[in-house]
Length: 75
Image (cartoon, rainbow, N blue to C red; front, side, top):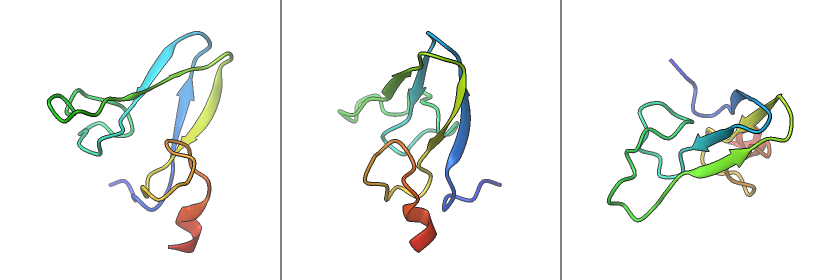
């Protein structure tokens, strides 16, 4: 089971879109699964310029959403 007080590390590919959940309802977090429909919210599209790892906030308290800024360390 995933610990929501830690960030999600995801692999992104150059020139491909990654859709990151912003509504908190996805059953496939941190990825969007369409659960936001009808909520007025939508996912964040990240398009990387290179293959890399990125860290998506899991605690919901980051000041740089959707990216982890280390806030989970003070919870």
